[in-house]
Image (tube, rainbow, N blue to C red; front, side, top):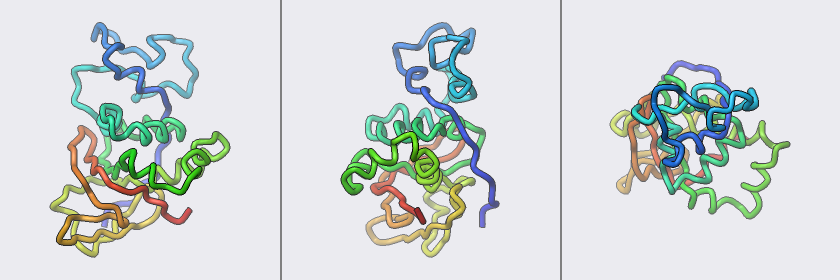
Length: 190
C-alpha cells in the first residue's frame, strides 16, 4: 500500500511558458508572464520556470498534448500546476478531452467557476496517486490511494486495465512519475 501524503498546491499559466513561441535563451529562467517580475505571487514556483532542455514533467506532458487541453484548463483553474512539476513520484490518470466532454451538460463549466475551486481541486487530485505505478504494477483487485484521500479500484480485464472504471488508453513516463491516459473523469466522493 503506498504511503499517504498530503496534497500540495500549485500555481497557473504554464502554457504560455512552454509554448514554442516562448522559447528563448536558456541562460536565465523566466516566468510564464514572459519574465515579468511583477507577476502575481500565485504565478510563481517550479511550474513557471522555463527549461526547454529538460525532459518533461507530468505537467509538461499534459501541456504538450492536444488531447488534454481541458485537463490543463482544469489544472490551471484549480491552481495545481506546481504539484504536477514537483519531484514526485506521482502517477496521474489523465482524462482526455473526450472524457470531459462526456460529463453531464454544464458540469465542467460549473467546476471551472472560481467559487468551485475547492471542489475542482478535489476532482483533479482524485486523479493522482502519490507513488509511481507502471502498467505492470497495476494488478487486478488493487485499491490505489489517491491524493484526494480516497482509494480507487484497479481491474484488469481482457480488453485492458481499468482504474476507477476508466480504461487506460496509453502510458507516458515523465521525469516525476507516470501519466496514464484514461477515457473517463474520476468523480470520487464529491
